[in-house]
Image 1: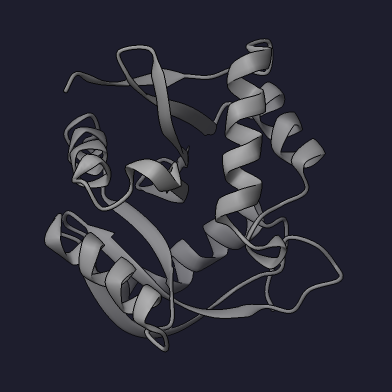
Image 2: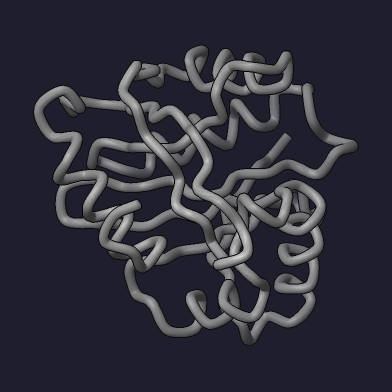
Amino acid sequence: MELELKKVSVSHKSDMGFIERIYIESFPPDERRPVNEFRQLIADDNEFSVYMLLNEEERMGFLTYWTFDTFIYAEHFAIVPEHRNGGIGKSVMEAFIASTKLPLILEVEMPDTEMAQRRIGFYKRVGFKLWDISYKQPPYQEAYEALPMMLMTYRDIDLDKDFEHIKRKIYKTVYNVSDI
């Protein structure tokens, strides 16, 4: 299998249609921003990147992330349902890790459900560390509440020491809030 990560821009209409469909299908409304804001970020924000996963010409999923001075925040990652649990996600995450040099951070749901536990296990298997630090994901829209989440990291990063700085950067840039 020849996997490729292709950077997507809003001018790629069919790619954007695919990504928007998977984005909406894979994440509940309280865990994603409105599609028009998503498109605007892709068009305007140099820190925000969207990559589509391809196997030859077949679209398999997507990954979004923010590149900051001292770390990369991976925001959304989804594989189309028909290709989940076959090792593709692991291959994509390993390729993403290999393509970066900065420490990586991502949010995961609390391990309250089997699916959340499986997701955490997936990230642990590719080398991420789960931190037991109280964290809330700010709401993407006013209609929703903040969500209790956990942070996972990859590479040399000490959340015990740097948590407040990292949280402030994510809150301000990704969620456009100062605190919750």
